[in-house]
Length: 209
View 1 (cartoon, rainbow, N blue to C red):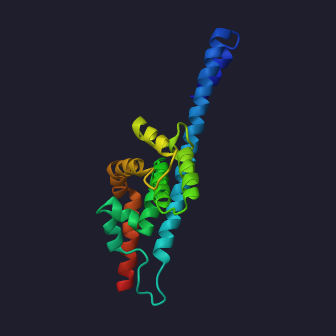
View 2 (cartoon, rainbow, N blue to C red; view 1 turned 90 degrees about the vertical axis):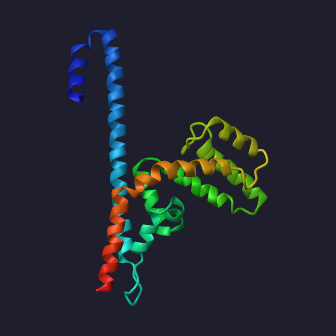
View 3 (cartoon, one colour; view 1 turned 180 degrees about the vertical axis):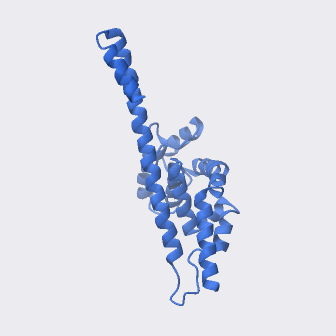
């Protein structure tokens, strides 16, 4: 594709009306190529993170060598519900790796930000953190903008005038439901989950022998 466009641009370089169109096509093609490379590099990075995570999970044991850091029972529990997955330290970490591989990690990050927000005691800190969450996840073209409908966003904007601990409850629930119905089932069927299950099974079988 790149070679063909180069030949065409040379052929039509003396015809301005065509050359202008070719410039636009070349620019779009280059942007697409750069985006594809970014996605490939990001996936490669998170595959490396997963390998490290697998090594970490399988290397941890007590001094007596009788305890699995990541057990088969725990990994099996992750498949029962998203709630149980997020309640487990390694389950939460594995799910974040999966979401990053699918380029939708902002959902998990927003959910975690809301969990921390609900623990705030100081009114001054509550206001500051509420505005930070809005700027990072909610407003149009935010760095990690999540997918929310107009009415939910508008309600948050109104709540920001006098923030309370329930400021993001509705939005957090919508994002949780989105992960539960979309990303979570894919995670359970993913190679990441299968690899972690195999590591836990292999580790525990080794310790029993």
